[in-house]
Length: 286
Image 1: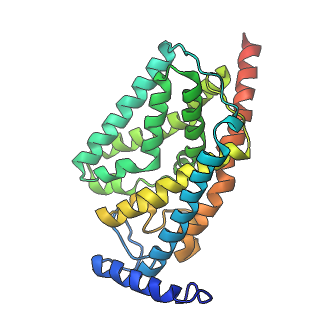
Image 2: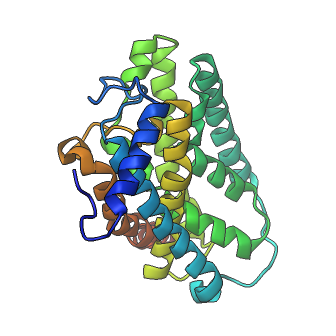
Image 3: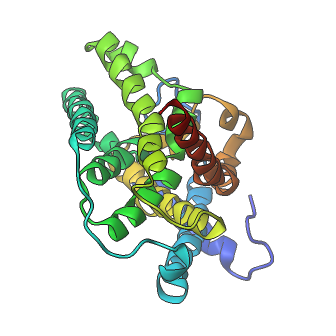
């Protein structure tokens, strides 16, 4: 299949790259597996090389532009200053730490430690850090990234994939309970900080771009190469998850990545609006 027929030499280079990639992993099937773990060439090696190069060039360029040209000033972060960490912060941080610790043990026990690199675990660590963060300006930037990169939590709750917990049969009920408890906490706990205006930034397209860039770097620069190296379908970078992406065929990665831009705006813009509603309700109760 020709991918870039109008660019001289592009298809020959992609053919060569795809061949080398296939020679590295020659035994992978071409069908999507029934489990979420095994690797596959659901997307051909040639297409994988193409997407890896294009999306990495795009997101690395975008994050470089945001850092070196735009900077942090337009985000409207608060001035540097100390933040008091209270009992509720500590309890939330402790609860999240217990849940992510069980998850880490479970991944170790099932030889799937590589899955700790998935976004839901990364944003869990980000929220734990925010619970204990004592500096308002840098904490606001961290929390802004968390809110926008937390998109996967809502997708996981909408289309939960618990097949492998049942298949492995290692404390399946506990593992599934921890899965849902952790994801619901990731979805709901941020309202506490937003309602109290602990961390603030200027809501809008620029903040959404930061979150989208963070997710893009995570998936294309880290998770896809990690999936190839570890021979695991980390965060569905080798074959699609249950839900709509199944019907998108071999283009599911690029389509999902493109759709993430408007979807990131949901937690990035709708979330603060809902948090304002929560704050208003709290004031009325008082």
